[in-house]
Image (tube, rainbow, N blue to C red; front, side):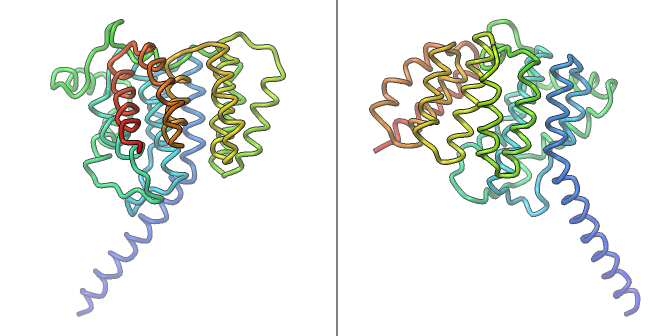
Length: 285
């Protein structure tokens, strides 16, 4: 009987430790995401990938709230960008979790291991340069990831912004993760008081629009999406505006916008995102 109590106590301690560890990792995850972005901007691709692994944290109970959902989608978006820099395509690895999160309308999104376990394994198995090389060799051979060429690279979705935008993105990102959307809006509005080239300016307006959207200011969100596209039109800002219109059931406006999104499709990843947007549009009543 004593052994039973000792064993039960050990299990309880393990559960408590696991919960504490998961909570600690979750708290640090937004900082790790920002750090990974900074390393990628500095050209440290492998280091960015390892740091991003620390930002990839699944809640202990496999229930993802709205804040965690936004964080995980940002992690996956950055992972796609890192893969594009490495000239590989990781859609097969990323899409199960990305699609689960982005398509769900639930306040708390329930996950299962099939959604995220391959990604967890990827980050666990690539935490050194040598392990990364070995993983990539085996994964390409097994078809888990693919080599991208100029016609299939995911780069087209991401505007080539300058490193000057990074501090503003980081500051606004921290505020967004805390739910301080108005403060994040102010960060981007202050940024736009400076001089930027068209790519950076369009990107900043696109980010500002998303902040207004999170702050439930649909009028200013709409205006800044349009401003972004007017300054420089690329797939991502057009897709974001199309998604905004579809989500808010503005069917007539979306009908005008979606052909513009499709015209900018330049990679398999773009095509997949456009097809999902088109499907959501067709479901509107």
